[in-house]
Length: 168
Image 1: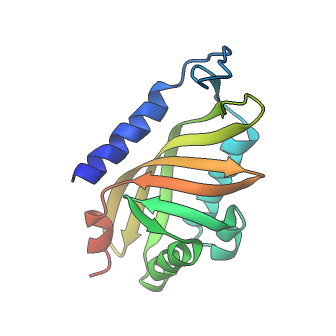
Image 2 (image 1 turned 180 degrees about the horizontal axis):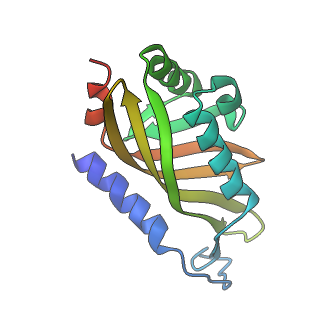
């Protein structure tokens, strides 16, 4: 439970950094980021969500770097493990529908040298997973780190109990 609280605090810290600041301090790196409501990276994440919704594992994998690290409720996974879960959903007749993804924004954080940046897409995703006549609704807090046009790390926080009940 402590780990889950830590994840929510971390995501809240990202969320509170929405104010735009163009000031930068090369020595500390503080106050050197800004937010974008829409960007190619937010579109990238939205498209990866569409592939997940379709349970299209080939397209889904194309959004991620081969060495991507998933932090799924603080459990570290790789791309193969993540895709295996999508395949398990499909094999068990579980469909996924994202009712909305909002808010979503990109936070660009300048590194201390002020020449490089880390690009984070933060989103709240509202999903409905259905098997037969049973539907489970899940809110997912997500943070995606994007480098060179691929998601290289993803932090997700959500309640798994309802999803696991669909496998019974």
